[in-house]
Image (cartoon, rainbow, N blue to C red; front, side, top):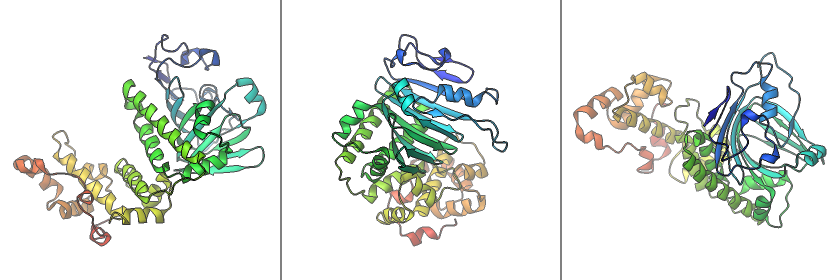
Length: 380
């Protein structure tokens, strides 16, 4: 494991001859012998150096335009974490706005020949090919990028996750299908497997940096297999109808990982899982639920789990905020309706009544189906 002023990587020269302290990666170094990880950021650099550093170290399959500093936004900032394998690369990035292009000359000179499948987690991506074909990808959208097609790219300030794979691997999945990147991107989002791929990419993006090497290797390989399965479905030309149950599963995974966000709402969830608000409501209705009710129940269950934990020592106000409730009084009232006692009474009782230790603290919605009206009577 090695570190620079703004970099971290976990391999030795025996695993990979290249390392960030040698400067920009060059193709003669080849790929690593095993799955390795690297983190780059603009932290600690002089404001005048951040963009040029990022353009040099992070961008390979397109050339970023010269930076035009904005007095309102300040110096350019970016951070990325990547898992690099002998087969391909996974990376998750947060970055200020950036524009760039891929020209025929660049394609001839650098020899980069891969596809990237990406997911927009926040912000927007604008893509235009030489023939005038364009594609705008927003939060929750999947997209496919072909590094040998001349194009123009423009990202707003964004958060995204990408998997880059060699052309032979992707073309083996696509078979005889040779879809232009914009058309392939639209087909990806129509795939019956798209909600599962989004969920996998989002979960890996959130957890990758905290996993050990063995776990990162396992999840990387699983993600690539799922990605290739989606591409195979796209290549068939007949993407299956997306079961709304898939959107439901993807939505509850997203909700459960964002409970602390007090602004979590239906438009955000629908955008994250790649469906319309109406589709999301129908997906929950098929389970006898509604999104706002599930959010509330999941937050209350999380609060109860924390109160039951021996390690938790925060105040009730802290607990409310940690579980996404801004108004502590409404939190107390909702908790009392759900568990028959206030949070303070629950914390005291669990120390006095051993039976309470065995309470199953899962959301009520997982135990039985609840009509929307039953849930709406809780304070919002």
